[in-house]
Image: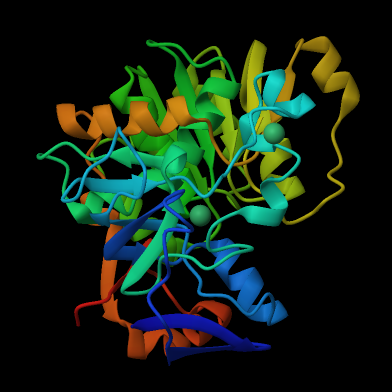
Length: 339
Ligand SMILES: [Zn+2]
Ligand SMILES: [Zn+2]
């Protein structure tokens, strides 16, 4: 079968490799329909290792369910990349996303993933797609679940005013999820005027602000009246994080999803005088996957148009180079094994 594999530093290629097996029935074999490229795939590409098949954002059809009683041949599915052990301290405390074995086993991150014609995945990582959730949407479930984790992390509830810093895919999916779950107002900030064109067209973005505008704080204050209840940080940069903290109301909560600067600088008195809470998390929970899929099925979460390019495997290297050069205005680039 064809698979898009890391071949070296800044190098992916389409390789001919054996179809993966079900590991004695412990895994299901899936024929991939679509698979997205994630920022973390870029990290692997830059590093040139591990030498795996990329892809943890995919959808497809089960061709062999292995020993599973829950799944059968023909089921349409997507999958989490997290193969939690459900036994370690993190798992037992309710953080299967931070399982001690996550970083050794994550599909498409540490082990062979779904940018291939077939992928084999332990069946406890699979989620069924209802008939009215397309394969294209199925490939967007994972990043949308990560974005949803941020909202839950920050204690989001219906009626809240939400600020999202950063109009990349995670930021946009956070905005979409917030509106789907009843946010009364959703604002986004973005440094790049070019990158503002897409979110400007989205029905779930109520306010869009240039992050470099010297009047930004005042504009966010005016827009939110009393400050935002929840902020989602999806840039990974200190400046955006500080903007979010200033824009929160008294008792507001910031959920951090972006990582670029590892050591961010916070204005501690600002946190104290407004009783601001800050939380961070990684990946998502199975419940986030289920919630995203049911929001998609209900029609409340419609992010199909965020799959802005669908390309063949042969174009993967060119796409990674474009992304690395910062020249891509795509929200999500999806690879199609059949093209
Ligand atoms: Zn991802
Ligand atoms: Zn565990």
